[in-house]
Image 1 (cartoon, rainbow, N blue to C red):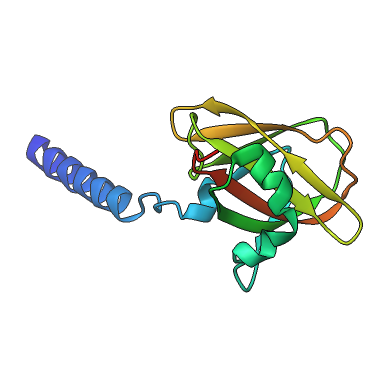
Image 2: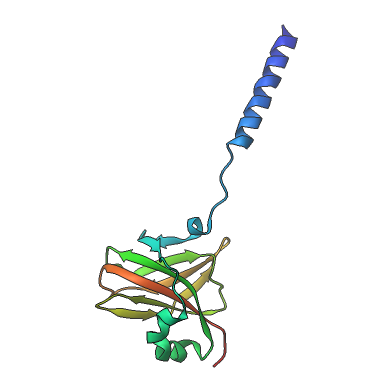
Length: 148
């Protein structure tokens, strides 16, 4: 009887182990790593924007970032509610770099320089969206390359 129980237990343990491995967690995609707090809805821009998309902001971007900057991310953001402090987690941010977030639509354009906080998994950008009108915005994350 002990042998039967031992064999049955071994089969159950092997079955449990293989199903746990087979049903393991999926690897996250790049979009799974983005996180807004509070949870704003966002979508990718199609077609993907180019540097010409932010040409309207060249003067201000040069003021904040110098003459050498690049567009590293763009998406549409639904700011459904007015909040003061907003956290944006992204794998594209690095703690010792310079960034500007541009929020724009037909009625308003805002420029934000974030406070960057390094986390274990990525970097969090903290923005003060106190006076931003709730609406859908085209968002452009621009990275400065350190040339003044």
